[in-house]
Amino acid sequence: MRITPEYGNVGIVLLGSFNPPIFRPEWFAKTGIISDEAAATAEIEVIHKQISAFRMAWASLRIESESFVAETDDAPYVRLFDLIMKTFRERLEHTPLWAVGINRRVHFRVRDVKTRDAIGKRLAPPEAWGEWGAMVTKELNEQSPERHGGMLSLTMQQRMIGDDRPGGSINARIEPSTRIPGGIGVFMEINDHYELPDRKNVVGCDQIIALLERNFESSLKRSEWIIDQIMALG
Amino acid sequence: MAGTDAVAIKENNIVPGTILKALAREHLSSIAKQIWIPNTEKTLGTSAPEGLSIGLIDHPHFHPARLHVRDSFVALQEWEGTIVSIYEDYFTARLVDITAEESIASEEADFPLDDIPACDRDLLRPGAIFRWAVGYRRSPGGTNMRGYQLAMRRLPQWTKRELDEAKVEALRIAGALKME
Image (tube, rainbow over all chains, first blue to last red; front, side, top):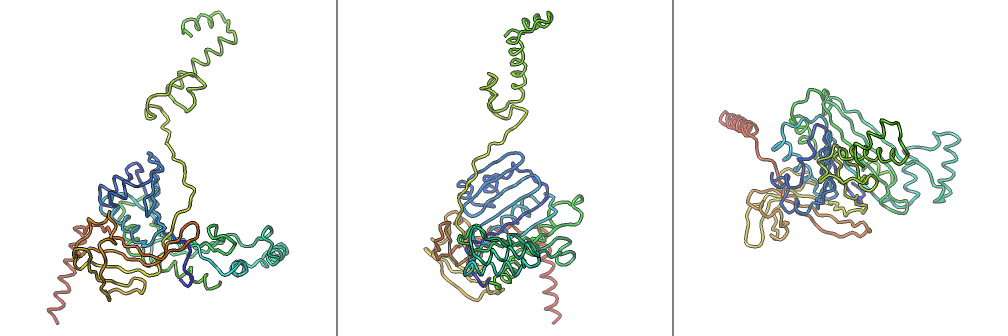
């Protein structure tokens, strides 16, 4: 990426059928998926029959009856991939999984407010909104923080059916950053979503885990390439 | 209040306000013993059952959500390493530059054993794989600190199917080499 992000995050989301209370830090340690120390220092938010959520030093996990979400703010992101592979390929291979999302999020800094506005105007020109859009533009140009409007959130989607996956899409979202102060930050999230066509007849996790294995590294590279296109506007 | 007294009063259709209240309290108390709801102890004068699991409603205990933002380590360059040999206080590894999209090792380097997190030391052996990322850690306060992260990979074991497939592929390659 041409601008090194201020903050980066990667998440893997699995959709399927899960039994949340089994997912405890001790279980992950006992099965060798994480270290004993990682389990001992994990901060448990909740462990209940409907939800299990805890955070380790380098990752957080949240499991509900139909979703398994693993996230990390720390590179190398491949650790997250290893955790999922070891969990489902080695220990829970009979868990029915029907979709996986590989999510890449970044907050990056641009030169100034004007540059960030220029990106917003390029992606969503206020002129397209007629007379009201002209009012939005006027207030943008006055640069008064209290009256500063403009594009708040935009999602672009590429449908990916039959290409490198049976079904799914790539969804790129861009917003002003809430983590970088001073109105000079941009937030981007790329959701790379893969799904099986017939979720009711899914047996086990083989297909989804194979999709994840085949695509994890290339998905992150493609996401960074998409983010780079936007960085080039800055 | 005794249950029989309540019945006698009801038969005579005399239900003073205070008795009615007492009846209601008794009725609600019996319900509360089955379905324990927080704070009923105070309002209905009942005792909460020992342990939440006895109740019909199993209330989850939510810890307060953390509101603070965490550090983030952003990699500028990343290598995949394979440990070649281990010495008293360092180890040697072959490195593949992942950032440059290399697929074979082009460098070799020595790392102090102290670079491996204590929790990952049990994975240290020749052939073990790790990731080494050089980048910076950004604190929520906005400070950047250059550094690196070394993480041993916890890979799944080979399955029987994968081993069988590898054997078939090896035989195919061996066959092709003989042909040549």
